Image (tube, rainbow, N blue to C red; front, side, top):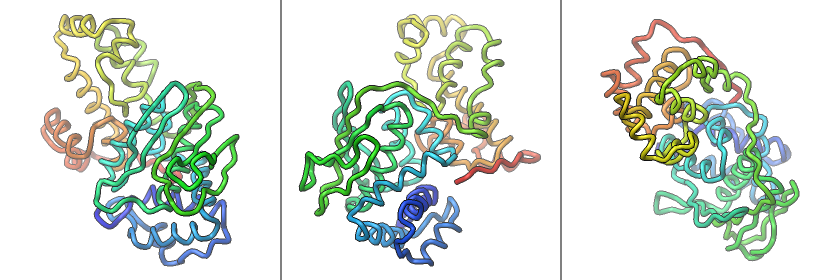
Length: 330
């Protein structure tokens, strides 16, 4: 999607800007393109950047930072994955995979993390770095995510800006950043972390496993599946699953081997079986399904799915007799 931006990201930012600062004189044609864009085509990057620049000039970046607040009211599979996280580190891992799935030019790098603080860097996978307005828009979006998953009394500042000690977000309020840029590095601090999960009606029923059915399953493979299904989009390491089951990694491997299972094969089967169900029963896109099921990127999803079902996801879906439609507020 070179020269384009994913329509979900663009619409979240622009709808948020129109919500917090309706007086900003945006280009009507670009707004129409964003409203009508689909997943494959995306939104023209030049027009999108022009909108962000207009917003930045309007009030020095305050609206760009504040625009992310609208994400609290939205329900979308990509947001579902990020908000269904039990730690800031999990969010960072998922956003790297999100960038790979939607071919985003930008992603976050975790530079440092402590007990109640971390430093993130918003970088580009291309030679051209993100523009200052893009840094601000992304920061506003992720501040919402970190608050929603449980970071209490969250604060944020830009250490590379002209006023490195200025908190641009503190006590639930935004302040315009110092002019002149330097917004690529974000220092976040919070008073405590209390894992929280906000319900997403419709998506919860669709994407969270049937807990009753899982509870009725027995055996070590079922125990692993119960853990993994809590957050299928997460990159589950053997040690993490073992710790959840109060076992050592070696003990878990031996237990699975005793019933003819290998950990990596079991995880792949769980992901692929859920992907097949979503392809059969929902109107989620192939990209969304691959992401919510925890695959590394679209190519990994296609290869893994084909190994299990002898055909790629798109062909598998085409052969299904019908789809149950499910609409989301995007």
